[in-house]
Amino acid sequence: MTTAAGTRGTNLPAVGGFNQNVILSLIRRTPGGISRAELARSSGLASQTVSNAVSRLIEEGLVEDGDSYVHGRGKPRILVRLRPDARHAVGVNFDLESTAFIVLDLAGSVVARRLVRRLPITPPATLMRAIADGVDDIIGRAGVDRSRVLGIGLGTPGPIDSQLGRLLGHPMLPGWDNEPIRDTVAALTGLPVVMEKATNAAPAAHLWLHPEVRDFAFVYYAAGIGTGLVLNGQLHRGVSGNAGEGGTIVVPADGLPAARPSEYLGHLVAPRYLLEQAEAEGLHLTAGTEDGRFTELLDEYGRGSPVAVTVMERAGRILGRAMSTLVNLLDVGDLVFGGPRWTDVAAIFLPLIAEELANAPQRQYPHTVNLMSASVGDEVAAFGAACLVLESALTIDPAALLI
Image 1 (cartoon, one colour):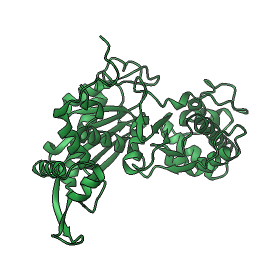
Image 2 (spheres, helix red, strand yellow):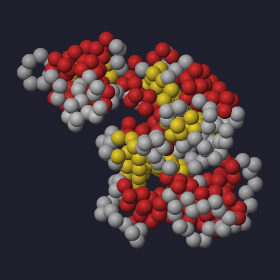
Image 3 (cartoon, rainbow, N blue to C red):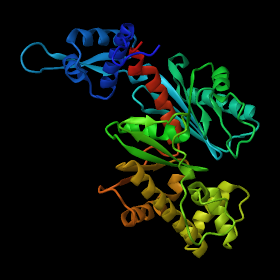
Image 4 (cartoon, rainbow, N blue to C red):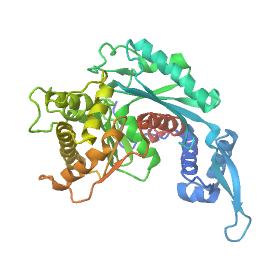
């Protein structure tokens, strides 16, 4: 039976919890504290509703009464403020090159962080055990009560099956498709796990730190490259949870070695392919690991090696052309860049991206596009994954109000 438009009911028992989380969100976004009267005005809720919600939050230990201040006539108003240490979230992001661990408090402040290069990624059970051990270690380093940890946000390469918590056909992680990563990490740690693609977790970090920004694309540069999207203030995951496969943007490029996998952006600018280009063009790199050879390539660039300069600056221009396509398609005002490898290339790539955007022959947008590096460093995806835990635990989707 179909339901006529406008006939869906309201799930009233959920309203109280929804209102409570609206109030908590307003308190969280006002670090200096906010009065109950101001909460009522900002939320549009009745004073008694606000008072009841604040009382429940105090009982749960999430907020507390703070300083008082005089506002006109009458008795002083008491400010309500967040108790940041009331809850914590752990963020983990594993990449082919590194694994980041982070602990955030309720305000989103970093309590502890750790970056581990080259955890063993095969077999899968070894990595998942290492992740569980790393979670135990970071909670210990943070010195927080484990019972106050809301859960773990787990950032991973993509694509993923967001329903089953698994990877889907990652070319460099063969055999992982049937591994229940999310559920295994949850079982090993005894904590709830939210699993998200790193390219979605990273923009969640920027959105948490800059909630006023409504529309932006986040370019995540790691072992590969992807683009996370925030549209109208909401993280855009797509139908399957795999939006943002920006590495498959086709960018025609001249002057590249003939032996390249494709003209996909990822095959043109990701670190391993830049190494292949440099070596094909005669630059001898001697380090035994990809990480070491990429460092060598950057050192050669710094010394003015003609091959290294050609490879790196060509990559920056190719990335700029891809960004022009992205901005034309989405009409976003901000492009944010980050990821485990971004700090290595930011000074090279950003000016070239800006130049390509300014001179794009098919530019369709009239506004200035703001380019910036993420304020969180290499751990941006782990930070964002932890933010998603805070969001999922402390907010209620408006859809939950409908029967």
